[in-house]
Image (tube, rainbow, N blue to C red; front, top):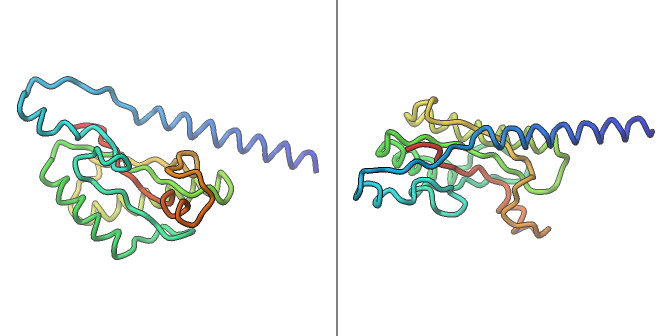
Length: 165
């Protein structure tokens, strides 16, 4: 019994360390632009969709314990793809997230499936795979920490982060 608890604790710590390691891997430094008016027009392109600062890209939400795209999600992704087609130099990272229910490893895997489902659909819509990276944060980056159905729904998402433009 004690061995099982230690083993689960070690596995949990290892999973958390992986999340932390991968979180740093996708970071990029903001570079200054000498393009004047173009830079001002694109000023909101180095943000994320959760904050609304990703050039109009929209966060995708998922039903409980699911990674299949709903018709609403597909419509948002079509709009996101249209934006990405207009800005051919933009690269994005898709972050998969879950609500706080369930274990760490399960939610890391589910977040990865969500991010990959979004990436695959964008590729079907004509966005090149080399413009899209994915990462899963599982339940580690909640938008809303409350334990209500509304909060859970906000946290079950794939959001976009601009990594290059």
